[in-house]
Image (cartoon, rainbow, N blue to C red; front, side, top):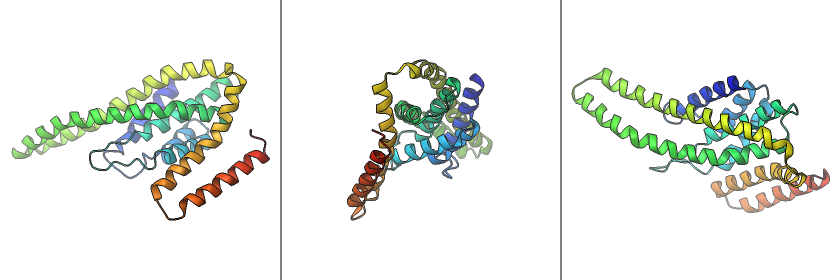
Amino acid sequence: MLTEIILLSFCGGLFCLDRIFLQIMISRPIVVAPFIGLLLNDPYAGLIIGAVVELFWIDRIPVGTYIPPNDTVAAVLATSFAVLTGQNLGGGTSPQLIALAVIIALPFGVVAGEIDIIIIKSNDVLSDKALLDAEKTNIKGIERKNYLGLIKVFSLMALYLMLVQNVLLKIIIRIYPVLPSPVVNTLSLLYYFLPILGIAVAVNSIKLRGAVPVFCVILLITAVVLEFFHVF
């Protein structure tokens, strides 16, 4: 499992670079999670997790000085928790496990967002030094400052992902099989509730006239389907 953790941490660090460097949207959870799932031979679980995480923070965008939670990190961790735990327990990736992985991973995405803020503040020093290099027409010096900033983001995020996975995966693998039935049933319900919550966030961010009735219809249809299949 250590090999998978190292690989996923490396890929997660690379994806995080897109948030500050390339910015071609490959760092979005809907892209990151299926890719991580593909690496772990479970792209379907990655697609479900990516969609949920994408919707959950779809209204959090970097505007001005606001730095949103790091949904890239949350997507990597949630997919890793769900798929690797299922593989190690030999039961596959269940809906309950996906729900548990998502709710565990989201707070660590918030923490990663705080790390992003620290990195951005520390880069002010590099920016000042780059301005001095510009005054001296030291192009190589400016390039080195940019590369150093990218290496800092990649290294810190990859290390963060590696530490969190190495600690929490062992805990999840140990406690998940012994969860009481009421908790498992709650996770089953949560699996269907999370997309509904994400849709509500998306509707709120769109702010279209008549969006609330549309959401209510979606909620009603979902409730009918759940009742039909006796999810409760």
